[in-house]
Image 1 (cartoon, chains in turn orange, blue):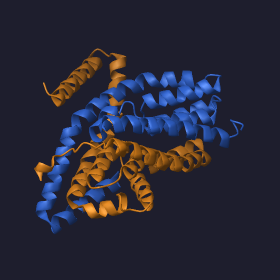
Image 2 (cartoon, helix red, strand yellow):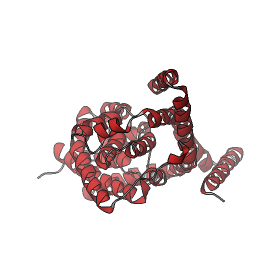
Image 3 (cartoon, chains in turn yellow, red):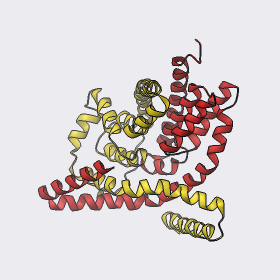
Image 4 (tube, chains in turn red, green):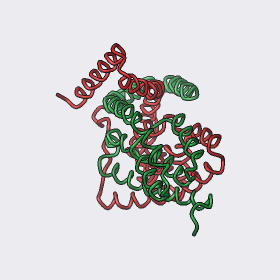
Length: 178
Length: 160
């Protein structure tokens, strides 16, 4: 059985388990299902448009312009681009992972995409607004300002390490499909 | 959320008028990527809904302990292991603050929660491969620890 079939089978089992839980009023199962709905709602709403945009990005974004802004011929301003792109990415890392992979396969450097993905989880605008209102602006300010140098520094170190290994990220859709 | 839809629709329309074929190819590519990783997304959702159920009590118990450094350590570890949406995480953080848990521990928890993804490992692996995923998360853990300590200093909880 293929890997994806197994996942779908597991999911079918999960749904069956939830249905039974509701029927016999099994508290634990009901709570698990309610949690599932919380996350699933976001995914159902965000993933389809996000993947449409990623697909369009793949066909339209020119290799040269990705290289210019995120790749080896770009200036350190690429970190600003990466962070700006991150703060406007809806859906956090679930959307950032596939987009980072596309960016890489269009010629972006490791340090750009790691800065992008890492800040996508830290700098989401709606999350930060909520945080500031509950824990105070000072808290959010410390968290955001303190993390920038570490994220960029860490991404550069990671890039050096991966380049030394001659590491390549997986290609999701085969080039042959063009 | 609405912005995402508006942007997507505008991008589709513009793209369609400039080049029909390219737009179709883009949609096909997007669909292929989506369908290829959909099983992983589903698996992830199931794991998260289970983890979230047991984590809340653990967090209140372990983060609220008297020893600040053990509290910090458990905040980093629990934050890495779990995953929860902001509307659960921040009210929880506020409750913890009210119980006298230091800002440093809260910062450690919130930051590692967002940065380190143990449960998202299967998904990240699909796009970054095993090694890059592992090291990116190790780096993120270290960053979360640094931010927690900086927050501790800024709030006067850690004296240098």
